[in-house]
Amino acid sequence: MRIIAKRSESKKLSSNILTIAAEAREAKKLNPNVIDGTIGTLYDEDGKMLEFPSIKKIIDSLSYAEKFGYASTAGTAKFKEGIARWALMQTYDDVTKDFYYGVIPTPGGSGAIGNTIDNYANEGDSILVPNICWGPYNAMAKERGCSVKNYELFKDGQFNTEDFKKDALELAEKQGRVLAIINDPCQNPTGYALEDKDWDEIIECINEISKDKTFVLLYDMAYIDYSHKGLNESREIFRKFKQFNENVMVVLAFSGSKTFSLYGLRIGAQMALTKDKEEIEYFNNANEFSARATWSNAAKMGVSLVEKLMFNDALKNEFMKELEDASNLLLDRSKLFLKEAKECGLECYTYKSGFFITIPCNGEKVFDRLKENNIFVVPLKQGIRISLSALSKKEIANLASKIKEVL
Ligand SMILES: Cc1ncc(COP(=O)(O)O)c(C=O)c1O
Image 1 (spheres, helix red, strand yellow):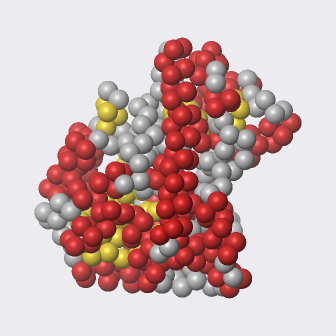
Image 2 (cartoon, protein in one colour):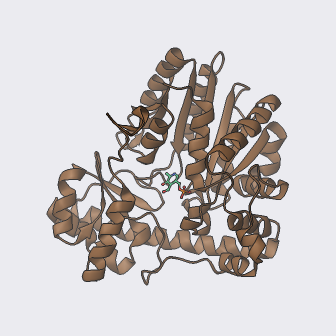
């Protein structure tokens, strides 16, 4: 007889990056030469968590109640508008002319993704994700009685639109609805970013399906603020979304962890865009309900931070400049790694920008051998993920050739 509930018997994380990262941290304590490329946290060149001075300044200025009081489950008007303006930036006026929107504060982007699966997939549905993607999507789907369907992310190093379309159509036929998660730009784990032509085909496919079925595009924008395109240019995609018809809802999953470099604070947002006003009412009601039923309310400190930052132009400009510097730091690291990888013939999946680079190989096999050589990375089925975000340029120098040797 089992004490654990029937539905929980098979719950077990197959790989937990946070556990591997803890192991790497311990190893580094014993040996400072250990290369810890495991964690998706941005560190500065001295190996310390990168801190944005503008964000620290705001947090230091908050009162006790602004930091630690209860936040509202649904979110305040200021938080909602602040997030919408940040998410859409210069496209805000244009996009909100065509779309209604709703915003719910969440514990990180994870809360936004979980809530979306909760309310936009029926039990037993499959969620459409690429074969190389952020692992927790699987657990989040399973937790809600769903599973994932994987399309091939790449064909000849480019987005595999054919496979996306094939699997989306198949799910639409089977389920009468599709929920697809696209993590873009700076895809975790490859650093890939979709091209305009890929988006054109994706939008055409979604509009075709949604003539008589519903389609929810969960746009996981966790790393958008580190895009090689810059803060404004990366938002131009939202103008394209205006082409979506009424049966489509776009849900943006915003991560304050990455944007503000406040990973443990657990602040994020779930933002819906749709042309159907009634759907926004359903969105607000159902997602507020789910929030109350799971985490109750998001971190007040994060909510207060958004309220202060987004309506103060001077602070916002300061922060945007700091973000730009952080993106450039990542870009410098990636250029160094990719240059050396090319020189020694180490193959990488197509990288454009972001925290991670992934090398195609049998990740599980290579992981232990790298560890023996004091290199800690994240093993995946399709490769090993290296967090450039966590490594200084000094640590990245010669890393490609060391990995090549082990491979
Ligand atoms: C692709 C992707 N989406 C979403 C998240 C959510 O992060 P958080 O819940 O900390 O905002 C992460 C974090 O690692 C991620 O890599």
